[in-house]
Image (cartoon, rainbow, N blue to C red):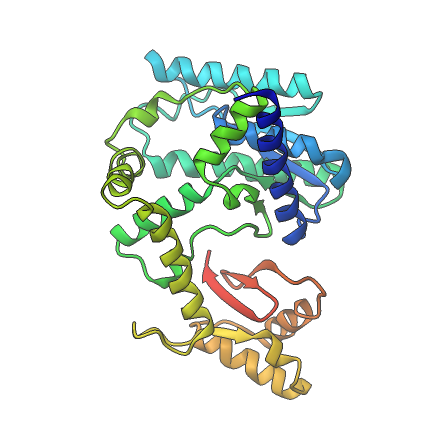
Length: 327
C-alpha cells in the first residue's frame, strides 16, 4: 500500500469512529481504554488518541494480565503487559495493570478469564471515577466479528431473544465504538498506520468454540457462500429489528418494547400506566412507583439514543423505542 492510499484508509477509519462517537453521545470525558496488546485494542487506542483533543477525552490505559503460565502463552502474557506499558509511555498516558496473578492457570475457562478481566476493569473504573469525581467508562475493542460470534455462541447454547441482542455500542459502564467495523477493516487500519501488535497464541487453539467459529466455521461459510458472513450478521439485525418494532414476527415472540414516541402524546397518568404495563410485560415483579418515575424522568432527556441499568435490566433507548434485556 502506497503512502497516499494508507493515509486515505486511515483517515476514513478514524472519521467513521468519530461519527460513531458523536452519534451515540459518549459524553464521558474520562475513558479507561482496555488494551490487551492485540490488533483490535491497539488500533482503538491509536484512533481514540487521534481524536482525544477534539473530543476533550481524558484517556487512561488498562491492561489485564491473566496469570502466570509456562511456555508460549506465559511469554505472550508477560510480553503483552510490557508492550502495553510501552504504548502508555509513548502516548504519555497513565497506565494501570495488575500483578501477575497465580490463581488463573492453564485450566481457567474462557468465562472465568472474562469474569476475572471485567472484575479488574470495573474496579479500576470505579477507583478512577472516585479520584476524578466524574463518570468513567471502559472502552473495549469489540468488532462486528465479535458480535456475530457472540450471537452464534448464544444460539448454540440455546439462548432466547435476549441473548441475541448481544453487545451494544454503549451501556452505562462500557462503550464499544469499533462495533461499526469488521476485523479486516481494523487490521487494514493498523497496517496503514504502521501499528505494531502482539498475536495471542491461544487464538490458534481450536478447542474453544469461539476460536473454532472464528478460524474454521465462518471462513468455510464464506468460502461456500461468498458474502454469507455479512448476510448472517444482517439477518440477526433484521430479526431483532422486527421483534423490536412489530407485535410478532411469526416466532411466537410477544411485543416487549415501549413506544417512546407514543408516550409523548399521553398525559401523566397514561404514561405511568404504560410504563407499569411494560414492566409487567417484560417480567418485572419487584418494581415500584419510584422505578416508574425514574424511567419517565430519564426519557425526558434530549439524547436520541442512550442506555441505563435498572431492576436487573439494561434499558436501551432509541428515538422511537425502549427495549430492556437482562444484564
